[in-house]
Length: 238
Image 1: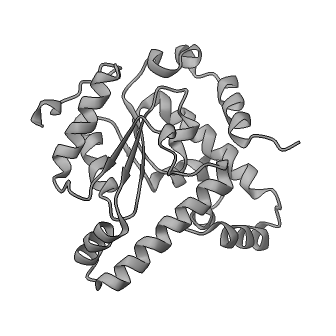
Image 2: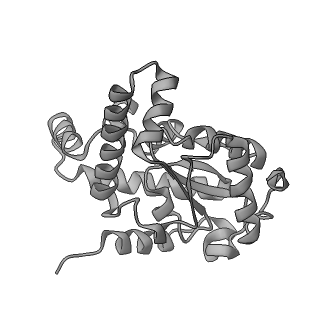
């Protein structure tokens, strides 16, 4: 009988304890603001996330997640980077199998990732990608998806990285596909499921990241998550 990876993950998460927060979930969460942000490449997610972290006075967590995982597992950071979401699932499998000989690398990676994300959930922060919106759904995270059409995302990437639009479109498609492959390998979920998120924003016609961040903060306030250990500023700007 096939097992539900996500169900196993949630059972594991519920079995962990982190002080007084261990019995709280969802909107009963106690602690600093926590956002799990998923994004399409070129949709502005990183810039928006940094603004959110600054306004909420919490950490912006992206590549430094690898340092935490390396410390937790005593693995080399460069190895973890090879296993990270920027590498497609089949390449990841091959690389890890060659380097470590461990056929169950994804299980090890997943467990380390979950443990680090749970520790971060007690601190608060804005976490970029890596399935955090699934792992932390019962830990009071506000789950946000920043998306955009390939055309508009490619235009942004072309302008920011000095590429022509065809090159940019290929890069956008490749990176988004790799992220989808990684998420599916990790937890058998896809980011195009709107039920996985509290708020989804298409930035095709939204170009002011401050205003997009304000929109998210306003939605958090409406969801009753604005006063959990921090003060939301700027939601009135829209």
